View: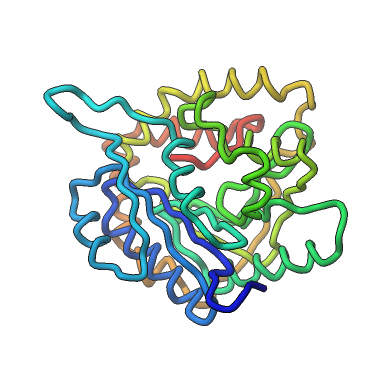
Amino acid sequence: MSAPGNPVVSVVIGSYNRSRYLRATVDTVRHELADLPHEIVVVDGGSSDGSLRWLLRQKDVITIVQHNHGEWNGKPIERSSWGYFMNLAFRAASGKYICMLSDDCLVIPGAIVNGLDVFERALEAGEPRVGAVAFYWRNWPEQDNYWVGFTYGNRMFVNHGLYLREALEKVGFIDAQSYFFYHADGDLCLRLDKAGYRCIDSPSSFIEHASHVNAPLKMQNFEHQESDWETYGARWSHLGEPKQAWNSTTYTDTERTAGKYWNRRIERLWSLSRKKAGAVAHVLRGMSARARRPRSRD
């Protein structure tokens, strides 16, 4: 799949102040890719919870720090967009494939390896070209099924999954100027599609997502959702609404990955979010329920 000594896949993870969850994400990646040449690239937004200290001790992790919060020289730091943030990691990655994850995700065993197999077989089959492979994911513990999203033109897009690096290079990576936080992932897959690269799914790749970690930060990000959606619609609505917003499937993780890493802590956060941050939870659930607006950026 790659030349000797070169990584087959670069796993890129964006992170900010989620030390406990970041460590779990990285651990599941390490177990998943133990027998495959790979690299892990984490771009951190200037965490103050011990994440950076931990990252600097991880000799198998390439760490990029882009201070995206706090103050400098007595002035608030102006936040950069999600696309700018993630492009730092995308451009640093050297693998043939780039796997995009969040720091509040867990890789269920087989997810990345199975996705790479789907990608390789699709590329070997020839045209039409494939530029991205979407993984199925769910919010844990409140949801049972896993899904992938569809956007304008009934095109599938990647919330968590794989990209072909050469395809990302061709379209100039994520549009970091037009979107602050939301819908840049859908825009990326539509630009890939326009350039001749399809997005397909990997039916045996599954990701757990902890949706209620760091709810205040998610609420800040949500302030930009409407303007990002307007930009997205202005650019792509001419393709038409998708026939369905989500493709849902069931899966039983016999390894009980979420239970091993999160267990009662996440369940407790989920309970607290309903009691003490009901407005945040309502907004986030409402966004997921809007058929026209599938997204997972948080």
